[in-house]
Amino acid sequence: MTRKLLNALRNAGMCGIFMLTGLPVAPAAAADAWPGQPIRMVVPFAPGGAVDTLGRLVSKQLTEILGQSVVVENKPGAGGNIGSNQVAKATPDGYTLLFGAAGNIAINPSLFDNMPYSVDKDLAPAALAGQSMNVLVVPAALPVNSVAELIDYARKHPDQLNYGSSGNGGTTHLAGELFNSMAGTRITHVPYQGSGPAMVDLLAGRVQLMFDNLPSAMPHIQRGALKALGVTGTTRSPQLPDVPTIAETGLPGFEATTWFGIFAPAGTPTAILERLNGAINQAMQTAPVEQKLESMAAYFQPTTREQFQALIRDDTAKWARVIKTAGIKLN
Image (cartoon, rainbow, N blue to C red):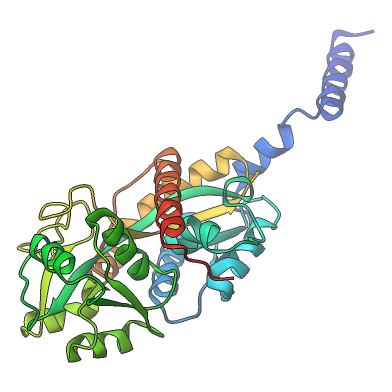
């Protein structure tokens, strides 16, 4: 038997061994070829909102970077659980992704008793896609000018102050409960159907404070109708450089931010997740996305998958404590 034929038989035998032992030859090859077809990006919220708008813009940039169409599909419902569950149950091949937010990833597990999926077991974080902070505002007539003064005033007037939010279970609600728990105050939550109606009552003095997003609060701050006492991030906002963080003035350690990120079904090959992480970090630093983030008073810092996972873990634990202490449930 010739050496050439022996080598051919050995090669054939080795291929059979690979196939029989299930070594990851096929997944590796699949990862190298990814993406070879259009990618579906599920946004688990209704069209037109902040998450949807940013998700569509990031998907457009990813289309250019990856060389394959990234098509957005809106699957709203149950606070983001319906669309998230669809991705969690999808084939882990890199062709179905989720553009999620802190609400449906880090908060919902503590708000809903019967989650249809497990964030830890069913979803794989790919990359962070921006963060944003809110601003604590009060009507100009309220006799406080700092977070420390608000805490003192609230302690002297227990159960007499109300704060408005855009609805139960959102970050504008939980920021108020975190404030209460850390400051030892009893400020009553008043939920609204969106931040617009809440702002109307805040300006009229029917509620006394609100943790609102910067773009909607800014015009009222600039014309003097509202006083900005502090921002909820760990650093000051470029849009309000003279306004300290809440942690700086009166409540050390306070932080209540929201974030956006992209996920894949658990089991997606690591090579695909890593390539996706790099592509998202690149997309977030393109001019169109940076301009959109600025208009949302949001910001971006490149992260590894491990850093994003740590953020999710920390936020999930924090909001679980707040939700349990306040006794909040949505079902």
